[in-house]
Image 1 (cartoon, one colour):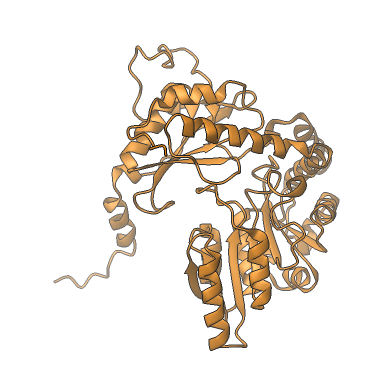
Image 2: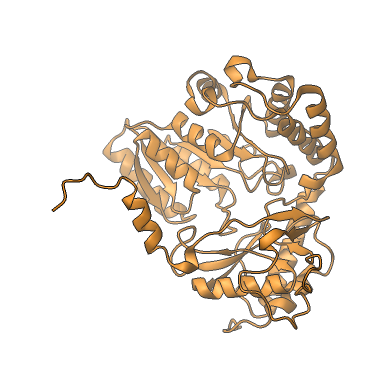
Length: 418
């Protein structure tokens, strides 16, 4: 028996050794290649299981790799390649450089930060907006503002990992209610309020769930929280720019939503994030939030690009509406072809296929046909619910749905029609 101390990295090595090959993640490299398209580069140019040499989409040895239609990114409105965003970011770099160099409370606040916060607050009808370098960081700050170790947090079972980490950091007790099930939430709120009338209650949900494509009844959710005196945090990361009036999200105008979390890395085509609140919550965040206080400010060029995106959203509010109409046609097309109809109304269309191997094989089949859609597997989604996550973009070429349906082929088990 050895007296040597244990290897502190042994648990990490054991976890890696136990990881099934079908769940091992690998970073791949892509280069934007025109509207709605990407090109895999370097060693990532071929699918994980390369198609046979006779497959039309397979590039000859030494040739330039073909384009991939991008059905994977969250750039819903195609803004990341928009000339106005590029020009705004470039002008900001030329004038101010790249990084802010310090936290907002030291010397990192730039005029573009203040302008973006002011314009976002007006657009969302909120008193205060604060910027953060990432959505993960914003969500940590959001949960920390509304909950502490004496609180009870009731969260939708499928909320983002960053929100769960935020709950863990506060030390609050956590209950998870069934996905978008407001009856389950109501029962839990009633029991909690009856058991401890003075306890601080916090409800966390999302307006568009990124792996499900589904949305709660935001109006009923806000009213339920108001009735039980519970604070409501609504993560609008995937909804802003697309859902709600003028793309302002499903929480727009709802008095029962105490804090909204949003990002610039999706429909805004930039990077970074923000929290939007009224009164005391916004002031508390500036005075006490560690994620805000102890982080270098959002890079000014990203803020400038986000501001340009906001201006485009204000000028062209119909972009989101057109994308939702397209999403409806895609859902109809997939259902007509015998596939399960993807739930929800937004631009995220999950195609549930069940097993990890099935999802990976379907991903590789689509990539061989020039379509990029990533297989999503546990633990990101529950066991037995691996899926292809199809994402629509404003700048996809006409005929993209027909291309997808041809590449998918008929499902192994077509849906029964009544």
